[in-house]
Image (tube, rainbow, N blue to C red; front, side):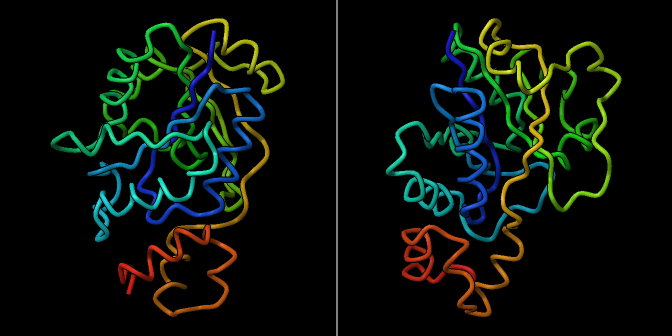
Length: 212
């Protein structure tokens, strides 16, 4: 059975940390693909000033030379908040026979009980929780997920054996980059920004006068 990674976020903008994480998951889980899904109306953040269309265009540019990374704009077509559980139900209809693996950061997992219908997530997918280099809190399993945790060394094999229902922790944090800091550096026109963004994304931002 193939495993498909699901990587959602505002991608405001997509940066090299996102790409490093996506490629780390590809190599760790041997995914057939990872679908990057820009949120149109993120439920837990302010809606970005940069439109979802611009953010999706930047994702497309960032991954154009990596065929296993796929832009999925399903949340841009929906009205209302971009709830993850709704996206997973849509993807489950598209990929009924594949294992789906939702990728999330440690900070998001710790706040999971505030998510819409969070306890239904494992009925639609596996979870891969990525340790954050900037997160001091210890990562612990929610009580509702007891008995679902597997070691990352077994995750590629175990995830591919069933379509949903398991959790694993990825111990290697991505590069210490944040979209908040990148937006500030873009506004300040810092030369350091060239190492944080794919060149085509930086060019798109400059051409469209974003983050000024």
